[in-house]
Image (cartoon, rainbow, N blue to C red):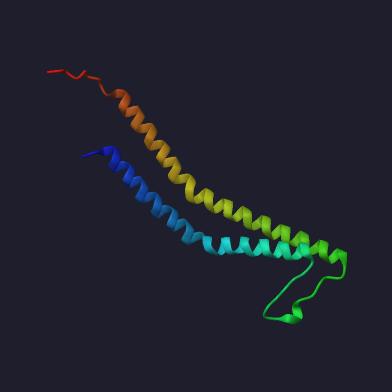
Length: 123
């Protein structure tokens, strides 16, 4: 039995389960979709055009420069909030498994230090 390989496989399976549970719990797909929509909104806002395929009457250009500035600030705030949410999701998903891997490697390094080295005899 190879303990090292067994621990790595166990860590890999548990880490995969952990990441999957975090993504399901925090709804990564919706968060990623929000970031992409936020980028599109920011681009449309910077151009000063909001385009809607479903409601053509909503396709208008803001006339007031203050309204454009307000829309830009609002889009930036939404985009920054979505980026912070994604960063938090990735921290929660990946830092614990990496911490356990580092702890396991440290423990195996310590245990290897206590093994006695016996020279191999040549026959």
